Image (cartoon, rainbow, N blue to C red):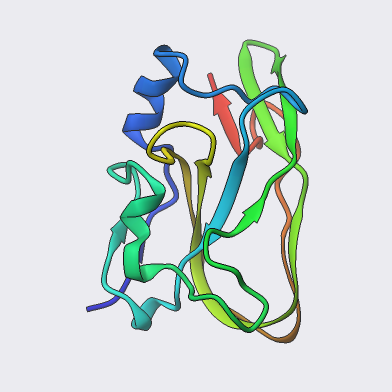
Length: 152
């Protein structure tokens, strides 16, 4: 069985927003991290709207070594704003240096909140490989049609 990843805003995240679980304010808000999944053929989980927390990754997360540390990179928040009638937030790009691995997707999660709740599941559209180099996730522009997290 292979890993299946669908880019989605988890349903649990939408409910948690209404409960005030997440604070995306830059410098004073929660700590958000991004963890990478293994290559498609190397795992067996299904990730998307039903993903609720970092612990859902279990054995499907890349292991520590070769430029990756379990738990992923800490993200730098961009304070939420409005673009027209859409609320948006974003993160600064993040890089794993001197890396050698293959990944098919990622999970953004809240490392501050109890249970490390999931905020976004990202599919890379297939396996992405880096060999003795930098692996960078470039977040889209913080705008109504493109921000990584947006509520219209």
